[in-house]
Image 1 (cartoon, each protein chain N blue to C red):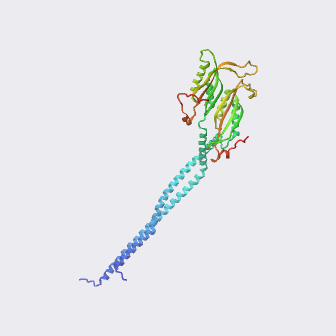
Image 2: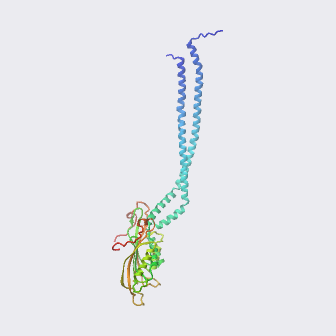
Image 3: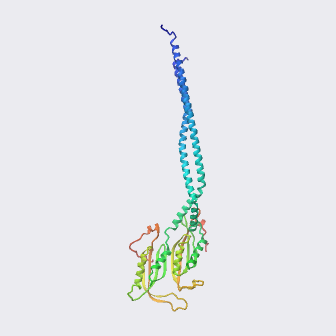
Amino acid sequence: MVRVNLLPREVIERRKYEQLYRYVFIGAVGMVLIVLFAYAGIFLLGQQKSDKLQTLQEETKQYQSQADAFSIFESKEQELLDREQVAQTALAGRIDMGMLAEEVSLVLPDEVWLGSVSISEKDGLSLSGNTPRSTSESVDVAYKSIAKLLVRLNELPTLFDVWLVTATNADWVGWSVPEGDAVPLAAKVVGFQATGKIEIPAASAASTGTIAVPAPPAAGN
Amino acid sequence: MKIAPREQFILTVVAAVLVVVVLIAVLVYPSYTKLTSLDSDISQAQIDVSTAKSLLAQRQGIKDRSAQTDAKWLTLANQVPDNPDLPALIIELQDAAFDSGVQLVAVTPAVPTNLGTYVSVPISIEILGTWADTVDYLQRISKLSRGLRTIQVSANVTDNTSQISRENAPLPAYFEDTKLDLEAYMIPASTGATPAAGVPAPAGP
């Protein structure tokens, strides 16, 4: 038996597309559902991440507030460090003049006495004193004593460029003596003046440096 | 206007696709963008937590050693105070003179000089005593709690016993008349302080 479709062509075509609408609808609903599920998943994930972010921010705030409460200690310590640095700058390169004076006293030969001592940061050491004069060839008198003093001064670690300014024969009248004693001391002496430069301690010494050969002092020194 | 079934179908499909695209554009894409932004915010927040934690630990350490800091402050305030603090300095100089056996003859502070971050207070003093006592005094003033710089020491032998007096102690036949140029220092509390503004200067003649 042969079936003959007598419907017009337009009707056949319309029925064909009417069947396809069902698939389009199912596909569209499926896609919408997938999109909605994706949205829901992303939304939930976003919520979780928002909660985590909030927790972290609260944690940060908590630590920050505790740290802020301790900031007074930090600023106090920082101020101390700043002031310490300024104090170090102010007190840098100090010369221990007490130690230097003691060292000079210790190396002073027994037969030499000083009339004046000047120790200056700027001008260094300046001594003037006397030593007995004699015709003896002993090493302990007159110019030899002065030479001995210069050698000893030069060996002091804090002094360099030790220099004899002058040494001349003189008549020395001693200082007055306590009441009841005899006449003031008097002697034939060699009077001398010597100078030396002082090693500046620590970093500031770099600008001064040490010179192997001592230079004579400037005129008038 | 009559539309053919084929075109109707195509239009329906296009409409359905448009609906899906609009849904993606309106719902999914902004949420996804927000999610990405949240990820970067969380990374930043974790860095912030770590930074805040380390800052807290650092300041906690500073707080723990605050007693040492206070002690250092005290030492530094004695060594280089924030004002000339002459009374304390004079007492220290006098005590050192008593301890070493020299006689303090004169103490003359000069006008403070502003040297930028700190202020120098020049002080000239004169002492009388034996050389040994003078050396002892020099050593003592270098160890005072107040930081002093000895600029110049000038000692001369003198035999003028009228200048010196000691109770119940024999006078030496001669002794040293020593002049000392010292410098004490102060760090003004405020950085803008100047000697004219913050340091009391001696009155004019």
